[in-house]
Length: 350
Image 1 (cartoon, helix red, strand yellow):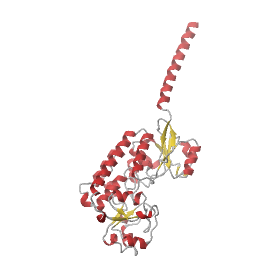
Image 2 (cartoon, rainbow, N blue to C red):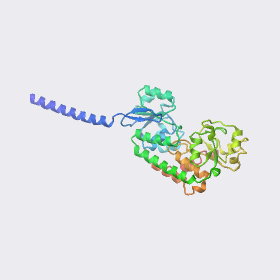
Image 3 (spheres, one colour):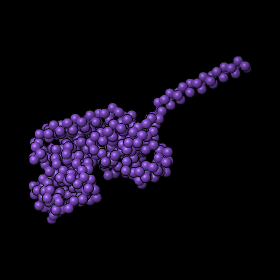
Image 4 (tube, rainbow, N blue to C red):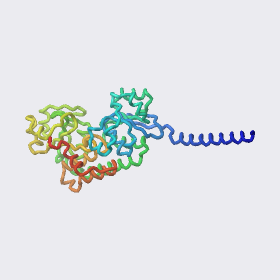
């Protein structure tokens, strides 16, 4: 009996020791680590992140998706405004929603048991509520980025999600296309660069030096006539007529989108050079808006460059570029009819 008890004790201790080794190995693999988010904050996150809650728009979902982590998203704001994205990831149509920005539902967020929350740098109130509930919050720029900052954000999320190689591949793609754009437009004299007005939601509402009014136009080789406004958005008709842009870009993003016919028929705008010459263009919408910061915004740069200077980009097939981008980064290429729709987002409402 004594010998049996000794053998039993040894067996028990052997099992416990093996368990402790496994636990130690697991702890080493999942040891907490620190990432620096786009708000410049050092955030302690789990070593392995398998459950992601998103509490913002601004392309955060798209960034996670192109990094191959769509299946890790356990909750996010309603994605129905992005039908092409839902086509690619049908489960997004029924994602739980714990709110967005400062309007978050902490109770719902906790039910989803996320390992990390990806949130906007602008949502200080909502982010604080989530952090006080014990959830690690990693901030992204949600439309506040310039090109270098957006590439930094791709790398940061790649590090967060353990997808550094995919993030590096995305950044490398961007850098190749940015070089192409710079090389093709560098020799255009300043006097020959197209002067562009970006219209957002209202005839006299633009975006000054923000991304969609500046990075988009400048990267494509154009001149943003409203750049001098800084971040100010509103202009008056007299100022717009004085600028007399050669091209008007119409964003289909806010409220009831304005159509080309709306702009052409506006009594205060009919004398603009862009209207007279028919140079009115609606910005495309893919899985995200191409005139806003997101992984596929580089396709918007290519589209605008080809629109402004078609003779310099004859070899650029935008449909093929789009198809290849989606296959490489979203993991699936849309049907040709869907891609054609990207370039005509308002359809019959044009």
